[in-house]
Image (cartoon, rainbow, N blue to C red; front, side, top):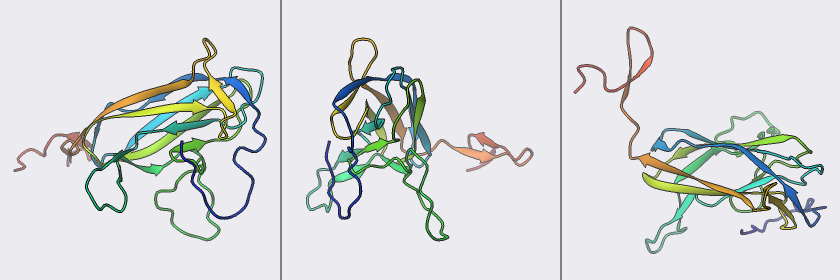
Length: 198
């Protein structure tokens, strides 16, 4: 995991994190296996704290929203497979009236590809939701790992066996969205080309 350095003060994201293992249950996870370029998709991961202690900072790290391009002389060799339109957490209110474009969500952290939603009380659940848009066709796999803190001290483990809470999603991204049209008699979107269309 990489840590980005930045300017400014504020409380450290690992403030008060104790060295301890917390049990976490992976309740639900979903991400469509069949997607298409430019067709929005939603990925969600829901976890529960079955233990007696509050988890300091429940977090999820993803490793595969980007791929590495090998063309020479690129300003950045990281290219998106999915563009994150909205990340987990409630977006912060703007101090002035404005229109937000692709709000990041309140769960962003200084760590690359890690989102956290704060403390998780005993026997409570938390749901991470990413609204994304696929931009690269092909078969891709997203790996994820759930943790109990951001500083590496608080660890998340399965209630049985103590293994890390991790998993993956595989998605086949088609190069174009499937054809559809609006049925003029009903106003509904229908699969396939409009009858008589060239």
